[in-house]
Length: 403
Image 1 (tube, rainbow, N blue to C red):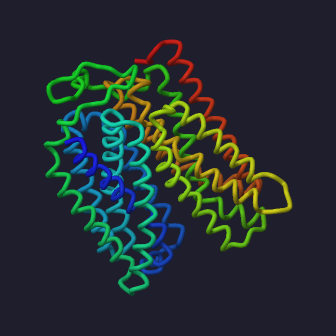
Image 2: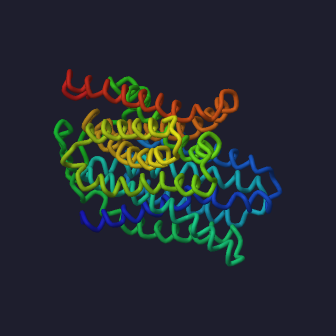
C-alpha cells in the first residue's frame, strides 16, 4: 500500500507541474491569436493565483471533511477540466473564466498533498516529490514547442496536458481507499494518538484560520516562506534581464544560464533527497538560505569577467532546492500534526502571495533605481527568510514544540 500510493503521488507531482509553465511558453503566440496585449498574461496569472490562495486557506476544512484522497482527485479533476477549457478558448474572457477552476483546484491539491506527504513520508520523499514537480514544469514548454512546431496550435498543448490530468484523475479516484491505509511517520516532537484508519485522533477537530495564525511561531514561518517564494519567482523572471543589462552577458548565454536556475532547483531536490533524513529539515533550510546568499554575492561581484555571475545563478538554484520541501516537511514537527493541514494551507497562500507580487514589485523598483538592484533584492529576502526561520528554531528550542 505504502509503495503503490507513493508511486501515484510521484506521478501526481509530475502531472501537477506540467501546466505551471505552459502559459508562459505559449503566450507569445496565444496573445496574437486572442488579439490582446502581451501584458494581459498577468491578468490570467493573477486570477489563477487568487483562486489558489483562496482554496489553500480553505484546504484544512475541506480536507478534514472529505479526506485527502477525495480532495486530491476532485482538485486534479478541476485542473483537468480547466486545461481542456483553455484548449477550446477562442477569446480572452474564456481564458479568464477557466482560470478560476484551475486556481481553485491547484491550491487545494497543493496543500492537501504537501500535508499528507509531510505526515506520512520521510523528508527524502518530500524533496524528490518537489523535484518531480520541477520535472513536470520543465517538460511543458517542450510540449508547447512540439505542438507549435507541428502546426497543431497552442490549444493542442493544453488539450494534451488536460487529457494527462484527466487520466490521473481516474487513477486518483481508484486509489481513494488507499489513502487511509498508510500509517503516518512519527518524527520526534510530532507524536499524536491515531484512530483506526491511521489518521491522528486529534485531526477530527477543526483548526480555524484564526486559531492557526495565533499559534506561536506561525507568523514567523509564514514570513520565511513568503520571502523564499518571492526570491524564487523574482529570480526566475528577472535573472536573464539582469545578466544582459547590468553584466553585458550575451542574451543567448543569459537565457541558458537562467534555465539552469530551474534545472538547479530540480537537480538539487533530487540530490537533497539522499541526505535530507540524515541532515534534518532545519539544517537543510539554513544551508539552503546560506547558499542562496552566496549565489547573490557572486551575482553582485564587480569583476571584469561574467563567470562569477553565471556560477552565482547556478548556485542560487541549488541553494533554493531544499528550502521549500524542508519548510513543508518540518511543519508537523514544529506545530503538531493536528495543526499541520491548516498551517500548510496558510503556507501555500503565503507562497502564492510572495510569488505573485514580488516580481512586479521588483520591476517597479528596477524601473526607478535600476536592475543593478537585483542581487541586493535577493539578499534582503535571504536575510528575512533566514532570520524568521532561525527565530522559529529558537522558539521551538525554548518551548519544546510550539503546539
